[in-house]
Length: 357
Ligand SMILES: C[S@@+](CC[C@H](N)C(=O)[O-])C[C@H]1O[C@@H](n2cnc3c(N)ncnc32)[C@H](O)[C@@H]1O
Image (cartoon, rainbow, N blue to C red; front, side, top):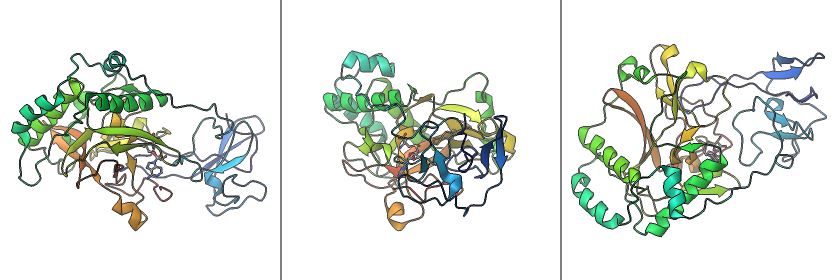
């Protein structure tokens, strides 16, 4: 439903992802027979009688949302956490929305095992880490490192509980791999040769390191990360122990779909997977239904020096056995307690980050 007031109109946006979408701006009104209409908009238009409850101004009407319950206005960038696109469906302001309280996931090992589908929960992480360390530790530059989990099993449970809490709050299930679902793109569509020039293959050593990360996670030994709910940034991810430069933080996972199927999505977490030369074959990762911790890692503000300085993670697209994958990798040493940030605009400057904290 769209508000019956016509002064402030919803902007229909194309799906956002860090790399590839055009940002189309138009607005909607409701005609006398209740149908939604799209109307051309001028960015600097002001509407005298409607203003943002947060900043008190009525500028940027295309980004001024009306609450579908109380009719008050809010700039999408004045909301906390901010919205990067105008939602297509109904929208309720923070006071009118049913307050979605983030309820903590119970710190009961059996429940956590169940949530993450872990069959054999590793208790003795330190021992296992030392054994596997021999395979991957190298001083050679550019060689990726497996994550080093926290040694305290209780603390690891707390980290997993924070992820489970966040996933539950956004209504997503846990998955740690790319998922190919009927009706979306098939796995056979993920062929890196479809990209002009292909994609850099992940070196054999690094594939082994990635496999090691996966085997740890399957045993319930997760990366040392804590999901934290921040009033300004929404969910965000913090390092829960020192993380060394070039460590694999996580793979970016979710349902794989064609971009063409997702152009009208509201999702703010889509990631380019395959930038195929043929636009109809471009693939995106959509973590809204199934995902892991990657979807909670925040982005830098590309418009400020301070924003750029925050970057400590990089999204790397690579080819693993001819299939595209996206890895989030530490690009410098990260201190315990530091938040993780990467550049959402790794390829094209399409993701609106100018209002990011
Ligand atoms: C991929 S999600 C990241 C997780 C998100 N914070 C959440 O609560 O689910 C992207 C959204 O996070 C928020 N976000 C990401 N980085 C931010 C930043 N540096 N400052 C403020 N908000 C940010 C924006 O609302 C953005 O649309």
